[in-house]
Length: 259
Image 1 (cartoon, helix red, strand yellow):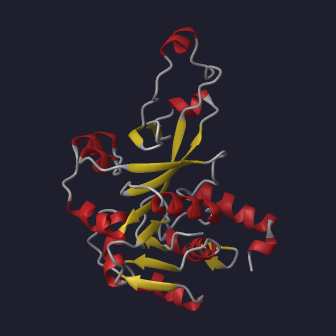
Image 2: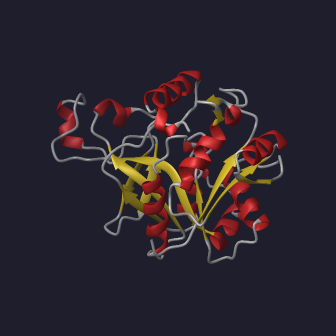
Image 3: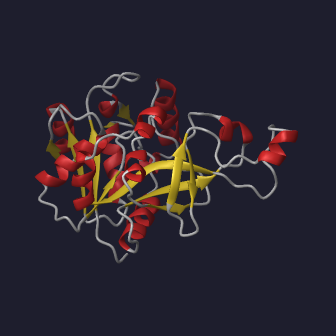
């Protein structure tokens, strides 16, 4: 790995769909600790939890996970990330990878790939995607799609099905046409810290508000987002009680991962 980077995991205590999600027990440890432990399996120089609550900081400390306390005013994980980078004294040229605090099965290799891509790119940000194989998923607005240019920089992110296979879908939308591989966006981001500080000061874009996709702010203001494409979908994160049970079941089937 030639690109040094720091993983920062934004984690707030409040959660509308799953109260105190960050502290939810997964095989004897809080979820945020499980996320940090997975991130530590990457080649990150440092893994830090950025939180708005002392209860999360205390839970991290119990398991030897570094944490910083940030303000409670942040409207997004990206803003919390920017404050954490400032508190950690990171230089503008440093790379920070935003790993969401509800991804206890995050693939460490994907973290490495995303950081490495940014390190070798002229883009201000990097993220990830994987091919969609199912027509229903392609049509689902909860599945965020991304289209790329020839250099694999993002042209656009959307909840709409893009690009639209006009001729094939005129006949049927039950299956994806042969040879068509639309991409689903994966919510993992690497930032150059200098740009991260610029980003949080940019005004939100109309497209961002329409789509409810924060990354569109970067494209609106002329920034570039490089995208690494992996072969398969990563394990899903935790948004609901059902998701939490699925992850608990996974750890039950893999007791070697629960130590």
